Amino acid sequence: MIKQIDIHGKTTVQNKMTKIVVRVMRSPRQSMVAVCRVTATVLMLCGVQGCASLVGSVTQNFANDLGTAILESDDPYMVRDGAPAYLILIDSLLAGNASNASLLEQSAELHSAYAGAFVAEPERAKKLHLKAKVQVLQAACLRLQDGCALDQRPYQEFSAWVDAQQTEQVPLLYNVASIWAGWIQANSDDFMAIAELGRVKALMQRVVELDGSYANGNAHLYMGVFETLVPPGMGGRPEKGRQHFEQALDISGGRNLMVKVMYADQYARLMFERKLHDQLLQDVMAADAKAPGLTLMNTVAKERAQLLLETADDYF
Image (cartoon, rainbow, N blue to C red; front, side):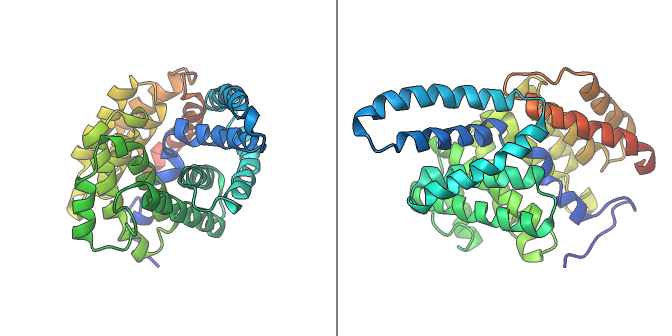
């Protein structure tokens, strides 16, 4: 079990780690559009070669419309209740296409997002996150040059591999890093899992270097979290984290309310900046949750902001 370390008598490293995926939930568009692509794939596997072109056109429109509807929903409970059907669907597709890199990546995205956002039972969450990690690493092995066994090779070799990646690899690198982070979050009571955080951080940093605007700036959001897990005296770099949070806000034009929530929770609470904490959360509560591609996550952000405001007097 990980030893809990008291920070200002208020929180623990373990509690900090458990926040990574629940509130980041990787790029919402990638996670939910992956669901839609799976649906399209099922219909395209009708086996009638002559209809492939027509079906592909129709289902792509359907996929885009469904993805937009999910992302712009203000009812996360409806999304939660509907997600298991797609988990079963993608499992059935992989049963006959176990080496399909696209399906592996899509399945990993969906399982990780679902587990991080909606699964409260620790053991079930661990199982889902492990499945997602294994699948996305398999996808990397299939798609990226020398991309196999990224969690096994010596760190120096791994670091050199990461530095060699180029802009066209950003989408998969981001997925590997974010899904891997979800697995670490689910296993935050295991020192062996925590030890892999350095690899995840290296991957996400490379995404920032190659295309920091990717996924609505969420790579910066992750880096902000990584830098504010612990205070400066324990190796944290909160001011560097603050810069990443600000960058994420700039990239999204302030529309991604989850950035402000995590900025308040990870940085302001860590540094005991009550004024900044309350201002960020009040801004979230006053903002309109509806924004293209962000409504679902903004709705969740508002719920989280309310909880943080209600507990602020106990914390500060």
